[in-house]
Length: 210
Image (cartoon, rainbow, N blue to C red; front, side):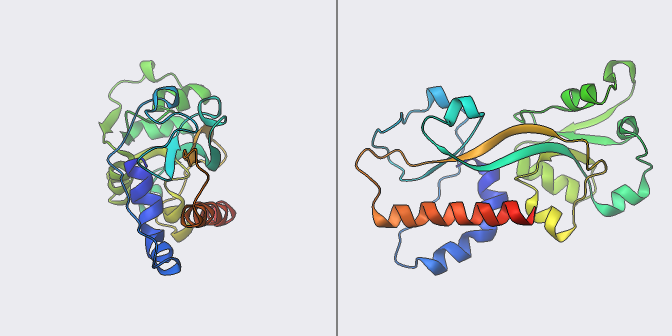
């Protein structure tokens, strides 16, 4: 699975998975694979060295072989204290703060500002810092470095506990999504099916609490 998904979404829930299925051998590989779905080394219905994959991408890339686990939208987020310290009456006010970007995100600050009708090229001195991967950018925002433009799927925990808030809740843009993929051609063993169902149940709970 992608590193930031493992860090932000799985790790806070891993104790629950382990407690529910103490006899299942759980091994998590989150070293990262940024290949497009069409170039994935494990094609549909081919045996692969992992029983369950969490993959990231657009619907047209994965819907023929995977099930959508978590949809997402992108919008700016910051801490409540950062929000209180700045006057974010309009989207262009964000340009007077430090903008945290992540290079692999499917929605960039340019994209988001263009949708709001803000031309960044006409603004001089925009403060920006690039931090990769996403879970490090989220940590920077939590530490008050600036404002992130990030996936709702990755900041769900922070939104639920109030440590991050959206300055403009209505100004979001659809992203891609996280998909669950079980590539074995031999049918799913009961332990694999149990883990898959656990992921789906946790994702549904995540969505309902978002």
